Length: 568
Image (cartoon, rainbow, N blue to C red):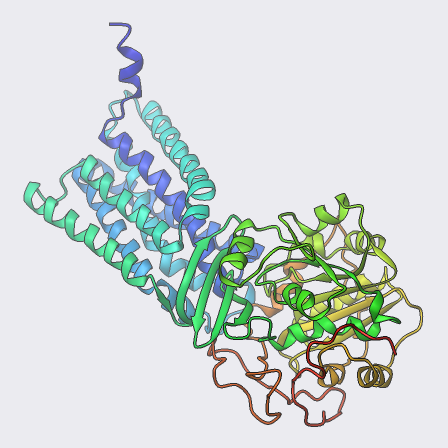
C-alpha cells in the first residue's frame, strides 16, 4: 500500500487539471501578448505595465464572478465549456488580431496608455474566462476544509503559471511564430476541455471540440504565408524580438519587432534601399585621410546592409559585426546574402560586451542597434560612449543611427543622446534624414578632432574625394546642435530611455527609400517598386535643411568600382 501512495499523490483529478492548465494558459497568453502588442505599441515599461495590469484585472473579475456562482453552478462540465470558449477566442486572435491592432493604434490616446484598448479587448475576455476555473475547482475540490482547498488550488494555479512562463519564454517563443504559439494554447484549451468534462453531452462534446479545433487550426494556417507588407518568406520569434522576412516586388525587407529594419534589392544586393544607410559613408568625409579607415566595427547587424557595402566598396577595409541575436545572423546569411570572409567577421555578442572584451581598436564604430521603441539602454550611456572612445584610434570616428525626431516633444531621446555623446567626444554632428519634425533616422557623428567641420568644408571634400558614392544631398541635411538643457546625460545608474522614447509612441516612423538604381537613377523619379510599407512617407530628393534647397542630383556612384579611397 505504501508504495502506491506517492504515485496516487501525483495524479491530478479533473478540477486540479483544470486549475493547472488555466495557470499555464493565462501566463502563456500574457507573455504572448507582449510579442503581439510590441510591433504597434512598442515594448516599453508602459506597454508591459498595461499588459500586466489588464491580465490581473481580468483574472480578478473572473475570480469574483466565478466565486459568486461556484456554490450553485460549479461542475466539471462548466469548466470544460470555459476552455472551449477560450479556444474559440484564441482562434479569433489569430484571424483578426493583427488587423485589430493596426486599427486601435490610431486611437487618439496619450501615448503611455495607447495600448490599453488593444490589450483589454484582445486579451481581457479569455483571461476573464480562465478566472472562473479556480473558484469552481475549489468548490469541487476533494480536500477537506475551505482553507486546505483554497491553498491547494492556489498552489496548482501558481505552478501552472510557472510552467507557462518558462515554457513560453524558453521553448515556444524561440521555436514558433506568434500564430503557432496561439495555436498551441488553443489546442491546450481544447485538450483540457476533453480531459475535464463533457460540456454538452458525449455527442455534442465531440462535435464541438472538433469544430473548435478546426477553427483554431484553420486560423493558424490561414494566417500564415502573407501579410499586409507582402509575401512572408520567413518568420520566427527569437529570444529578443519577432523576426519576419518579407518580399514585395524586387525588395526583400527584414522586420524586427514589427518595424522595418533593413532592406535588400534582390537584383542588386549591395544597393542602398533605405536612404539612411547612405549616411554610413559620411565618416569618409570627416576623416583627415579616408585611406586610414581600414578597421570598422558595426554594432548591430540586421540585414548587414552597411557591412556588405563596405566590404564590396572599399578593398582595404575589414569589417567586424557584433550582433546579439543569433536568429538575425542566421536570417542574414540565409536571406540577405551575407557571407563571412577574411574581411567580414560576425560575432554573436552584445555590442557592449564585445567592446569590453576585445583588444582591437577601430577607425570607425557604427552603432546601429536602436529601434524606434526598443533601445538597449546600456548602449546609450556615457559609460558606453567612454568605452567606445577607448576602442577608437586617436583619429577614430563614432557613427550612431538614432531613431527620433529632430525637434518637438518626440526629440527628447535624440537630444539626450546628443548631450551624452558630447560629454565624451569634442565634436558631435547631427544629420536628420527625412526633413521636418517627424520621427526618422537621425545620424550622429562624433569625432576626436577639436576642429569643427562646416557644411561647406564637407561639400568641398565630397567634390574632391572619390569614395564611391555622392553624398551631396546627405551633407545638406547638416543640422545645428539641438538644445539639450532640458534632457539628461544618460548614465548606467540613470538612463530613463523609456520615458524619453514615450513621446514617439503612436507617431509614424518615416523611412525614405532610395531610387531604383544607384547607377542610373533619374533625380526626379523615385522607384515605384519600393513600397514595402504603405505607411511610410517618401520624400526622396526633397530634403532641404536650414532653409537650403538641395540641387538636383542622381543617387548614382561617382566612380564605378573604385580601386581605392583617395585622400584630398
